[in-house]
Image 1 (cartoon, rainbow, N blue to C red):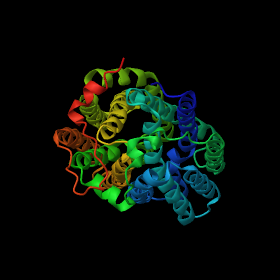
Image 2: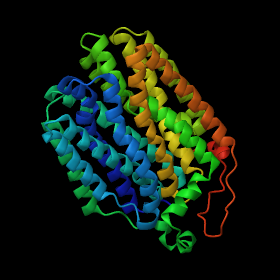
Image 3: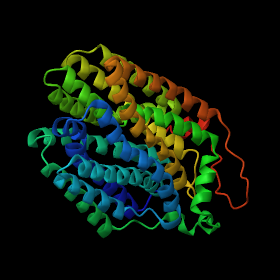
Image 4: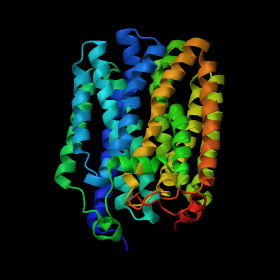
Length: 416
């Protein structure tokens, strides 16, 4: 049966809200590396470590938050409010310590929000529509990243009012979410809801025992290290090696978002045609090629061309990864699986930290070659993960694991 009108309207609300809050993120947080470099005089390695600390802590908190959402519901208004307060704090911070503390809180809040939001989307959307709405959400997110950087350039990358305005946008979304209300979970009256609920720790352990998820987390970690915070590594590189590098960086951010808007529909159709795994591998290959292209580029044309290639790879791997994880979980443990998978956001720490270290030690060649190797290794890990069998339940009360084989996911994704 098609979803009722209220659930469908709520999906549209989540998609639109995701776009709005990402305008706020892009017009402020995308310039963190530039601000830390120009306002506080930090080097590439220090910037990478500081910008990676928040995602590192968020990666640790996300599995607990995801499992907890299986028990108490997908409630994330408070997470949005915490993000809002931390952004306002960044706007008023006068020292690098205060600024970085607020940034870490914001990064943790965003990391916790993501798995809960994805699980809620899966709860509301029927399986045959999930790729469509995941793609819409991803398109809305990148629409925000297409518009936000231009606002940041117009206002000034280090202008504190941007962070305050971004916090107000997050607070407005949280208030709207509270007023709209989350639709009743349709599984509440089903047989799965009648099963005994297990503890948060048991849910995390059950998800961690799934070998397929283990490889997906490993592959996702390497991928996120490449694309998750590419702005934190590319911005210092461009600003120090090219004249007008900061402006070029802002244009690349907008190119990234615009290519997503144009190519998202074609990427979704390709995923439906070839399956999530094949699309994932193809995306990894494109990202690898783009990193080598960045290494060989010396001006706007080259960086713009390979940013297009990078973005095409990105719009293939992101929805494919969500679908691969969704294919190995069920309604009872979806929050646990998406939460455990969000541990891969630890790549947001290793990417800037290792990329900054390699750039500081070996220059751009070391950084880009490292990221290219990560993309190749990620394709291998996702391929291995799809070949792994599901785990056997150890106890009667353990959360059920979906019996759907990921290798058969491609047939499920051939939607009309």
